[in-house]
Amino acid sequence: DVADRAAPQEADVPPTAKHKRVKVIPRQQAVDSLHRNVAAVVPVEDKTAHKQPPSKEDDKSFLDAPVANLEDNPGEMGKPVNLPKDMPPDMKKAVDDGWSKNAFNQYVSDLISVHRSLPDPRDAWCKDSAMYLSNLPKTDVIICFHNEAWSVLIRTVHSVLDRSPPELIGEIILVDDYSDMPHLKRQLEDYFASYSMVKIVRGPQREGLIRARLLGAKYAKSPVITYLDSHCECAEGWLEPLLDRIARNSTTVVCPVIDVIDDTTLEFHYRDSSGVNVGGFDWNLQFSWHSVPEREKKRHNSTSEPVYSPTMAGGLFSIDRKFFERLGTYDSGFDIWGGENLELSFKTWMCGGTLEIVPCSHVGHIFRKRSPYKWRTGVNVLKKNSVRLAEVWMDDYAKYYYQRIGMDKGDFGDISERQKLREDLQCKSFQWYLDNIYPELFIPGDAVANGEIRSINTNMCIDAPKTGDEEPVSVYECHGQGGHQYWMLSKTGEIRRDQACLDYAGKDVILFGCHGSKGNQFWTYRESSKLLHHGSSGKCLAINEAKDKLVMEECDASHLRQHWMMENYDSS
Ligand code: LR7
Ligand code: MN
Image 1 (tube, rainbow, N blue to C red):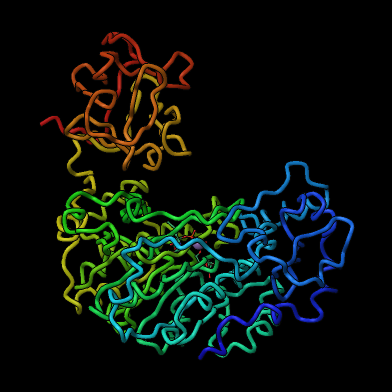
Image 2: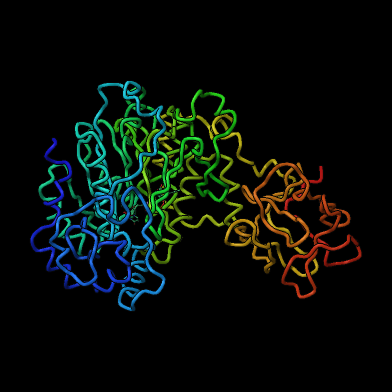
């Protein structure tokens, strides 16, 4: 129904909006300081975000003037919007407030049209419509949100409406997971009142994103379900290549390439097909990205062809509705956030499906550095979800996760129904999955040692930095909880944590992506001397006098500070 598509631009600004705008934000100041690069500021309470004409500092009549050139609006074509360094205090406050509520720059988002244009990120290969089947199935699009910013949520919905063939969309189902921000109540209903394609469903209590998605699925009627996060922007041609894969085989689950929308400038950075990544995971059951493995590249003639992916990131995918149901949808025992992406990935592969990333399909997502909303208090939600996942799907391999959490599974509830599901579906083993779908994953059982690395003399343990690679690796009192003190010594002499290896290039001992060519990442442990000997330098690892950092010294077995104990060391 074409009438459901984006309303024309004049209709965007209801008659009252002008007055509302004036009240709320120190717009003139903002406009001044933005040096005309950016148009008027749209307050949070406003019902629409707008395409505003370029400003004139001394003239407020621009509010009524027609838009001269849409491309001059902030953020068009996915361009970044930069705020000035020295903002007036009111504006700075509004910006800070937006960050603290959302963990992205809401103020900047509010400056950008909810219909902004994006660059076309597709390879030429993708644009030949003859590549896609002609009668593709319809999809419902389910977007769950908990306290999402207005302009970001509305832009997500418009990006679907503006850039999907209308005949391929059944409904857009917005699931409100018990938000308390006022703009998500009546204002949201009013805004979409004339869009018959858009439905709003409200959860009766805070469910978390997994059960919110299940609630949305209850309302889905189209043959395909597509999930999106509530801070996405779909690019031109995003939908057809996804639906095409499902039309060809209903057990294929597909993800678009997830382009980065910058959390600060809202710039849309797209990834061309040569930079496509696939999903993996580590033994902490965290999702991770990897370049397409060689074995997979060999299957293709073009980098635009769909690639197999061991896992999905979680938020953005399409799936045949019946296949989703056959797979038992999600484990409804999963709370708030996390783990559901691996659950769906594992069972897709293990129970007869295929998981792909489709390089012709692009959707942007605002990646945040922290979670802005409340989780649950008193429960480690992520751990509980992950333990349920491990118990049901990972067979013997679950133990490697348990080592990472100090063997303390906590209360993970009843999983008997999920185990029965796996049995009824006669799914393959996790071993099969690892051997065939994710052979790149390092298996801790293949390690010569795994667990803590303890300085025998001081009872301090090697402790990984929190902020990823290339930070000096430090020491901390041994806590026996795994976590940052969990290390693996590989047969080839790497001291690993997931994809990162202990690396010494003459300065600090750091974590660096494992490269597999020994050198700075080559260590040998001798149980008899307790020394940890480093390959390229010939030195030995030691803890310093102050017992607060790692140092490299000339090897001397009589120096107690060079004595280490590697947990679960297998000398054979
Ligand atoms: O309690 C909640 N209720 C909700 O409705 C918590 C969240 N939500 C909504 C929220 O508004 C958002 O729309 O659920 C969606 C996902 O929450 P985010 O955006 O906080 O999650 P994320 O993007 O940080 O995390 C990724 O992993 C999650 C694991 O549970 C989900 O699968 C997210 O959908 C997923 N996001 C993506 O896959 C986008 C790419 C990120 C990567 C890598
Ligand atoms: Mn997200």
